[in-house]
Structure formats: C-alpha cells, structure tokens
Length: 178
Image 1: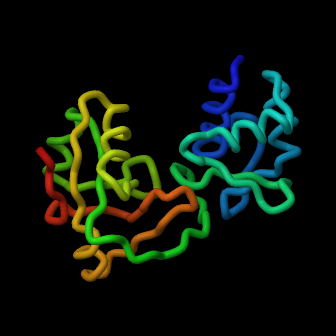
Image 2: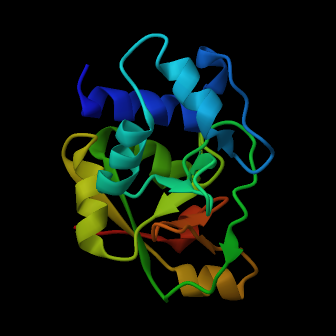
C-alpha cells in the first residue's frame, strides 16, 4: 500500500471512525501516536517516519501533532463530536464555497448545512473553492456574505490550515456565481 492509501486511511481513522482500528480520540480529537501506529501497523506497513511524512506532505494540512509528537489529530472535517478548540474569528466580507452541480438544487432551497460533518467548510478565495468543487464534478461556486452573517450573530472559526468553518449558511447569504 502506498503513502496515499495510508493517508486516506489515516483520515478515515482520525475524522470519522477511530474504532475501525480499536482506538479512541479524546474530547479534542487527539489520538495517542503510539497506539495509532501500533494499531495501523497490524494491517499495513506503518511507522513514525511514515506518519511524519504524511503530516508534512499533506497539501491540505489535514493533521497536527502536539508539541512532542505524542498525540495527533485531524484539524477539521470530523463527523464525530470532537472539540478541536477552534478559535473564533471575524471573517472577511466574502468567503466562497465550491460544490458540484448535483448539490445546487438542495443548496438553493436550504442553504449550506454541514450534513455529516460538524461544520460547513468555506474557502477564503475563489480559486480554492473551484478546486474543492471540482472534486464533485463540474464546479459551482457560491459567494458567501460572511461579513453580513457575522454582524447578524453567526459565529465563524478559522482552522489551523486556513479553512473557514461555520455551523450553517442560510440561503439569503449565498450568491451563486455564474
């Protein structure tokens, strides 16, 4: 198994299903690195060197170690209830959300909701939103009136890898870009 497959498996474990390898995460999403390595290495080659390489080379910066590298967690994207200690932040006037055409009717009707995740993920620039949307087919980009939302009382958080997060985006704050 290559590093990419192992990275995807690590994402599954740290964001959605730690129980698939018999480990648990603490309330802030941290996993014990020794237990993680021991459990993953039962089914595939895996060691600290591979784990460090995955963390360093992940282009989305999905993971963080604690200071002495004894614990690791996913920075966001969880479907399990964890508090990754996000810092509340004031967003720019506009943020962006990229999606695929198949989701447009639902978004136009209900706005953006987190579905299986804890938060709606937003990008600080249109280019990133296009890349995200492209993962779902032909991309559709929504411009989010984040400044207006924040002034109306909606909370925004900025994850350590630069992704903006909020609980929902009602449809009145969305502008579909053509």
